[in-house]
Image (cartoon, rainbow, N blue to C red; front, side):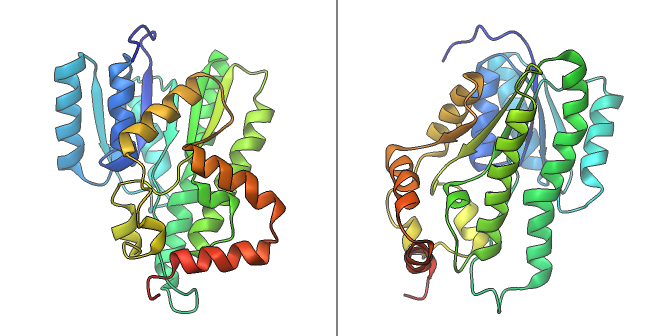
Length: 264
């Protein structure tokens, strides 16, 4: 990939593994300094050291838990205190939870809403203000192809991603003449820790046709830099998203339930 991008700083949440870690690698290869945010210090520090040594960039580690409502303000304050101007904000942190809604723990779902939605809103609000002053910046919100479908057996997760997609599209239009690019990355099933954390590793959805996290990260970066508002990874996923417009939502929900239900 090209390395002629002017030096900017990118803040990536959920950077310790999966798509977040791969986005950090892609951004470092393209000359960006980094602010890496996640809960696992060891993983972040190992990644930061690797990327600094290989690419000559500066990588700052911020250990925090976006399940805590105060975390976004702490992260913003930390970058301000370090005089780090964030030019690229990547809201990648998120997780899912499989199972029937009547049986899944509400406490876990409320944390999911905090991480997947509320912290994303907070961080975008905080970092958009200086971007507006500079009249330049990029925001990538990582949603999912789940954003386009009802999601039985993962109903709250799918709904959070639908919010991220809608919010991103609206914000992209609001900021269209501001110099700020807002892009929503929508990957399908990807080889990450997501399935095991969500307890859906045995679901048919993850049985084959699973994308490589590095490929998704490269695709997302290119789409963001090209100013694409919605970036759906993979030809099959794009086809499914287009096809669902012509199918009754009740049938889509039934099909998704079969894919999600690990008991079948």
